[in-house]
Image 1 (spheres, rainbow, N blue to C red):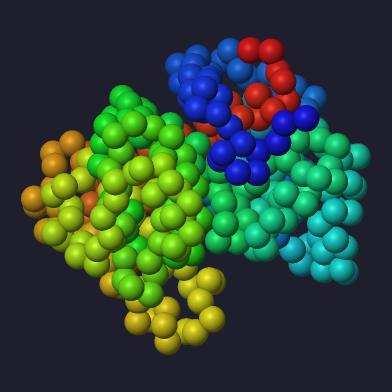
Image 2 (cartoon, rainbow, N blue to C red; image 1 turned 45 degrees about the horizontal axis):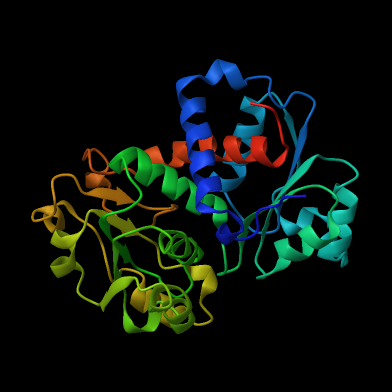
Length: 305
């Protein structure tokens, strides 16, 4: 049975198929309204979420299915000490598919190993966030018309940013991608991602702390917030949180067809003055998340399309 724990669980061909299904859902929503009738999605969110949880729920509801689950660990039996394995076995008795977010790396994999239904990793600690990566790939495809031959800059928290790690894994399989890694020294991309993914796959990358100098080189700018919840030291968070802020002035020398992305939520790292700029794609990105999750649910439930 297929689940999705890591973006590399999917081949490039499977990703392309999901993007094609998502595009068809966008073009023909009525065709999909009853595809998951009588199917149930369980959303097991042991960590706070707005977009991911609600987009999964909206995706299943738009497919005619129903949703059950919880939105915080304290409202589940994990507060009583129940293991992830037992939770997965239990939920398998009630639902047809699981979407799980957990603060501990590897928890969705444990769920997959114990569930009898498909499991989707909706984010595990600072590790993986494959459905955000699918959202990002659909957004790039729709904004640029391609998934190769571009330069992309990742800016902000590259150390703990699971969205960045997952997207870099995905992009390493496409041709002629140049990556700029823009971060403070303390939040640099982990060395294992550089060696295991970028260098192993021969991906050209530049590591820098200079945000403004890099922007004119980019086709895509992927902003991230500095994540307070990943810090052990409040002083370090406060020192680093506003290091990079995208303002209209910083875009003066950017390409006219630059695509600005952000997995959200944002704090201060993108000025709200940029929201009306046609290059700002982050709210279109949010909507794309619902469509690609609809496609994924259909695929994992083996619904005939």
